[in-house]
Length: 66
Image (cartoon, rainbow, N blue to C red; front, side, top):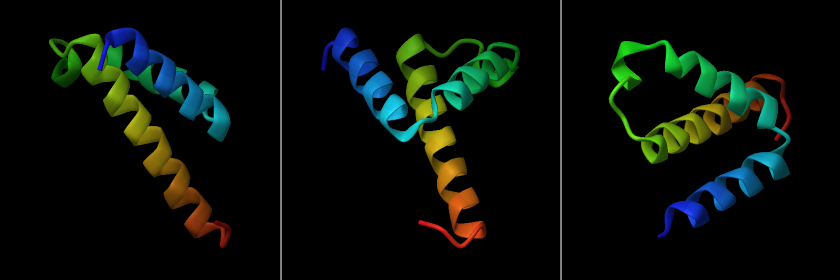
């Protein structure tokens, strides 16, 4: 998969779920963390995407919604 395709797919998925604000916040948080310091952008974006989707899923389960 080309880099552009990955970014497009992540933006589309995150936007469709209404998690763009959380995604951007997660990327900003990761920028100051040593464990993410040497990851390339693709790895950071995938990690942030998975993190916010997982967090959103857990929050919705806790609220009794899907």
